[in-house]
Image 1: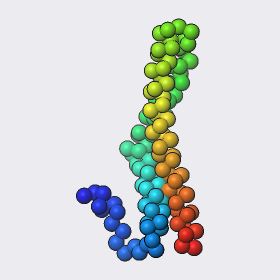
Image 2: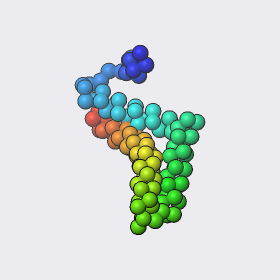
Image 3: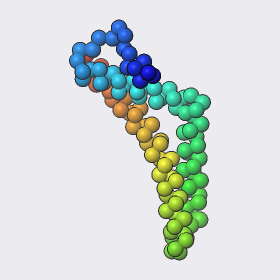
Image 4: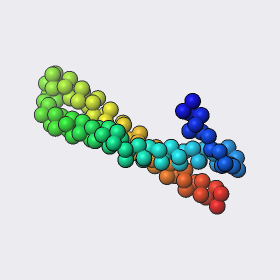
Length: 109
């Protein structure tokens, strides 16, 4: 139901399917940027940054020459990768939205 509401562009007439896709990509980028400005978005992004900083500090304390140190380091790297992936996905969607806005402007332009 929510998905149908998100794609309800009442009053918007698209030239073709390509223009509609540009519009959807741009809208998604705006939605993610708005999400990151919300309390929940700021909290999640802040937690990801904090996790990454903690992982960096913990990794410096690991001894990569020992079996247990390598094992701990791999665990830390997996945790850091989750935080980086979340931040990268958000940035990718926002950048794609900005690109789509420009493409949409050029397409109609």
